Length: 71
Image (tube, helix red, strand yellow):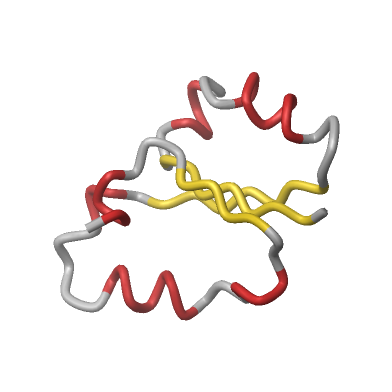
């Protein structure tokens, strides 16, 4: 199984989501893509971000602490 993990940009520095990614890696291949919610207010930023992802390549997408992408 292939999983896309959409993660908060700050977690690159804090590594606070690593524990969860490690759990997923026990049963799947995980690709992590970081998103900067501070840039979400910029016109077209979310659309451009979403267009850059090969959604059909994944069996599961996990959006981690990114409420802005759920709107």
